[in-house]
Length: 465
Length: 102
Image: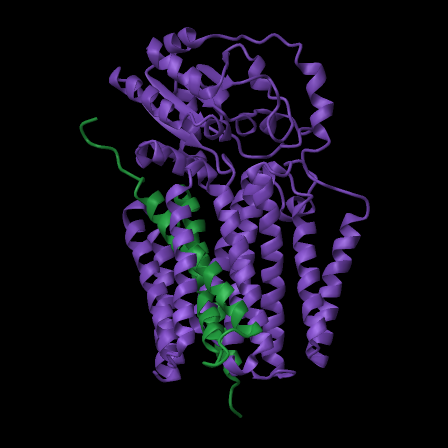
């Protein structure tokens, strides 16, 4: 058994290692080392916990068994999961953090002596408040992430679920959480503790159902942030520095990502949270515009255009991921490069279903990361490029965001693909994107529509090059 | 008058938020997905609480309500720790630079 002071120092060390883990992600070269620091920090934290409890009773064996069961499941998932399913995986993992926080809070509430928090029914006031916050935020994270997971997995429809009186109801529940917490702290009643958990689960569920599929990047980032705050709440209860530091890091990380995603869509955070976006516009704008003439072509035309180009910019979107076209795309690019054509990739901040999703998919297809550029780094290059190859993206290229103040996406930063000499659009049909808005680009003189499955079309183009 | 230890923890918390703010802004956007999976893994350090809860049962009565929740939380957090770090590792291994000859 080691002293409380010594273990506190080790927890501090593991907190610092977690900071270094995030710091490593500032560039791909240092990122692997960063991940190693993270693992080291975790090993230290777990070992110190065993040593500080000290009593290696038979309970110890069970702890190892449960640890091993979870570890095996986790490792199995990590190796099996396809990269396209990353958003679902992360949402699922968030729900587990949330639930773990709830379980730890329940344990601490039922057996406060084990954590030096007082006796059952007479828990220290501060600890009880911290515990309630940790449990409530954990429960919200859990049920919210479950909904996000179901929506991303397609088990639940991505269309927002809204009903009358939704916002007043949510406000009422949020207020009741505060009221229940207050009475829980003054009476120490276990019934109130359970009620608190139930209404927190409920509000997590209700907060996420009105948010549409297109806003999932924000939702995932937001739940990432919540899981951090839940961990921090439990960290205060357990008086554990490693947990407090980590909770704060994760909480601010998720908050920053949500901010970046909101900015990428030019929407305020509250606008996303209140939900319902993209539900009504869909029907109003589609019908009348589809009559306009569209130039459509086949793989040969596309190959001809690209062969005669000297530079090509690829704009991938979620559709590429759905069609699993990233490998075919890389092969096409390899052929282009053999013909001395300069190729780069342009990634919009909200391309895909979570922050940075496209980059991972391209990396998986062996695309070197120094050929992949963010919006602000590449947007000026479109004017000098010969061909923009838009594959599975739509809204992020829509010039209406710059020109039409009436458009729901007006003000959103978009990729200036229309400045290219010609634009190739791989799409299955003329249907509008997730935001439900028609894209003016389809009808332009220099646009060639390639109506096909993204993967098949890319393969056909490669054959014709 | 002595300062309540809570204030120290609060100080650590607030300062860590600032560290998190600056560190995360320096993360390159192309690594935002690994950032999320690794934050997932490290937030599962909540397992320390679960282990304490799991070990709290005495030898005649290892499984009481409190320790059962602890054991379950251990498994949940372990899924995240192993899954989170390994999937991050898997992703990061894919990020390669351009080869000079190609």
